[in-house]
Image (cartoon, rainbow, N blue to C red; front, side):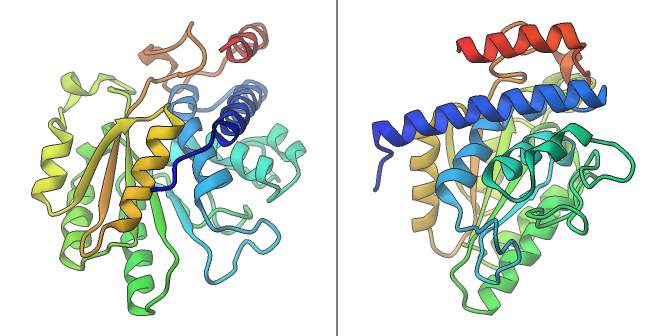
Length: 277
């Protein structure tokens, strides 16, 4: 297994800070957006776009690229920040989140935003689309991979489990999915709203290879993705233990920050907290 070097880890952590700062700035300016769940997947998306995935911002539709499906589409600011930082479009566009006449909608839109591989937003549908992509890859005997990111609250959608059955049945080993297991959704703790626990046991029962890891540990996440690449005959689910609002101690694990935008004063304070991490 190829582990991350100290230099790579340091670089990725610095990039993740940039992503978090951009998330805060764009949601604040828009006065709308999902802060907590965007911050909780910032480390994962940074790792995928700046280390793991075979992508080319200059050729976003190249046939052999890896695909990313943000099934928890409300966390679009995290995806947009990564795409802009990677060079898919000018970073200035981040200042127009959710503005009419601009490309960055409240949920990802593959028709208008370079680098977005699938339009998502209705929870449960993204993982199904990812299964279709992975089946196409398998039928073409291709080598690219599909990555999908789900929320733990999203697991309450029945369509997720239909997709889980489908992926295992068709042995979609080029599919690696992640559960952002921060324990909170818009209405409160997942255990109180509609518990999906035990997540790992359920996906194993559905025929997936399952890995549990920390969602803010670059080295551990990288090792999990490396392991997923070695799995044959079944899809892989990486269940990440994460913190909602990660990087801003003042709002970490606060359900009220699921879909709340910071004020300008809060944004300045939160950015300082991210920089101090």
